[in-house]
Amino acid sequence: MSYKVFIDGSSGTTGLRIADRLAGRPELELLSIPEESRKDLHKRAETINAADLAFLCLPDAASKEVIPLVEPHVRVLDTSTAFRTAPGWVYGFPELHGQREKIRQANRVAVPGCHASGFICLARPLVELGLAPADYPFTCHSLTGYSGGGKKMIAEYQDPGRPALYSTPRAYGLTLHHKHLPEMQAVSGLTAAPVFCPIVDDYYAGMEVTVPMRMELLPGVTPQAVAQALADYYAGEALFTVHPLGETPADGMLAAGAMQGTDRVQIYCTASPDGSQMLLISLFDNLGKGSSGAAVQCMNILLGLPETAGLE
Image 1 (tube, rainbow, N blue to C red):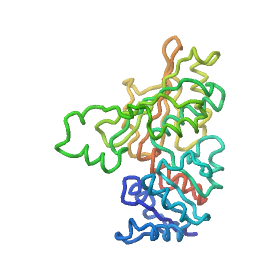
Image 2 (cartoon, rainbow, N blue to C red):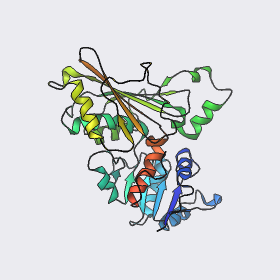
Image 3 (cartoon, one colour):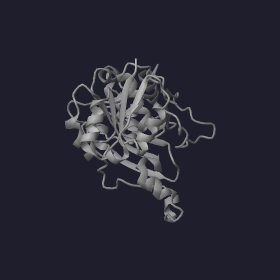
């Protein structure tokens, strides 16, 4: 059986990566519109409605503009932040317990944000399983390659005349109002948003998300229990590897670009010698499981195809 698929916004970073993953798949027919119609709202809507499934790789406002014109039966995967906590939309993170079946039955799926994916995959299981309370004061640092900022930031970083400080890590979201915070709180089941500091650095792709844990705030919970809970939670998931407590690379360092070019996630759990502190770390590609890879994974589920088809 062949499925008609349209990528609205195929010239952007995420859209291009999705197109690359779908190219050559015989079960998919990619629809397109003329370049001059790329910003024509009604032509876009017409093409979306001719598809079995459409990816919206657009700014929030453009996604919100076209959705009212989309027929209810068309399956839509939106990669913007517009609908990630919206009623009637399913959050596209299949590895969360119960989420895969919700995605399978949905017609409207919001693809998670990159920073959010790295935090949620660490925090959500702890809250869901009762190891951390919903009001635990989570904090998070997330280091990303500059491709996470899209075409504009890529051009800035690759400009030979760029400012010298672009070669150093740069923290942003300094007003503590980052656009991923609503989903980080809601999907993790928290009563308040985490304190979140994103950082961009001078490399193309890859993401390292760290969540420190103060064990004295989790009475009766040990680092071993946390590490085992994460391992059990993701057991059998093709795209997740949870390393045993304390296991790190031979040099004792984790490189943020280690998973570049893949659609997989690696989780590391470390603890202080006395067990009073932990550090939970997720490594993945911000353009893979943090974006286009996650979108393709959800598409496969929606269309009843092998879940990891077309992934790296």
